[in-house]
Length: 113
Image 1 (cartoon, rainbow, N blue to C red):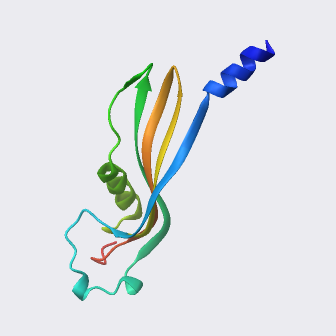
Image 2 (image 1 turned 45 degrees about the horizontal axis):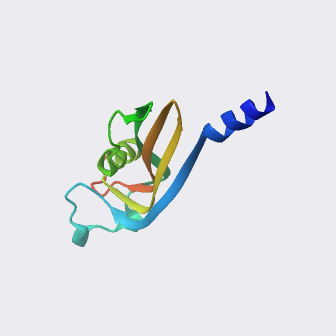
């Protein structure tokens, strides 16, 4: 029984890998010449994610950075992310999940509420 529990614990693992840090990232058209980022509305510690399931050995989609960024910008009500960190996460045991997470500060350069 102990061997089974040890083996089960070994296979029921996940991991998170830090890919990179980004000073600024956006998928919107922004004119930074006329914007003071420090004075624009900001929301810190926003996490955006895109996750897809894995069934047995077959992924049911590919997580995308664009979708994770869109999620973060929507949650933070902005159009630019600064001081962002990008991570790949996964876990698996017969079924599993793989995903991309982006964490950082969302800035609203348009000043909308």
